[in-house]
Image (cartoon, rainbow, N blue to C red; front, side):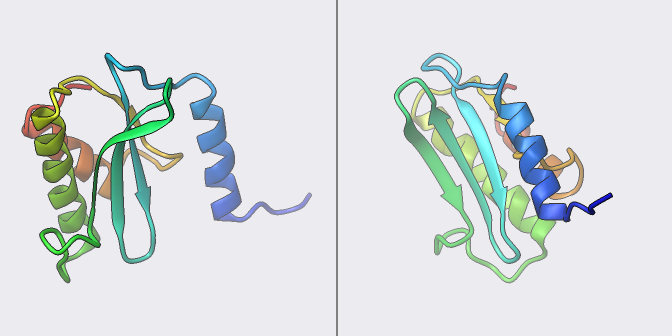
Length: 118
């Protein structure tokens, strides 16, 4: 039996989740992505294929040499504030194939604490 590496396994899980998860104009999708150094979040209207709001740790306001969980918390707060400014209060959370734990949970909890509903 061939071994499947971690990255390919996560992509397979993400594809399976995305089959049933779409963002609409009323309730767009909050997608998260993690690289080795950065945390990215964007709110997407899948009907039009447009990104409505985004936040990531490459921005000067969010850039820091903090641990990934702290960075994820900052990005979650920023994405929620920007979404509320754009009159987006409800989203569908797309964890990107990651387990809802650690960085993913920190980002989601921070966004919920700032008033984003999902």
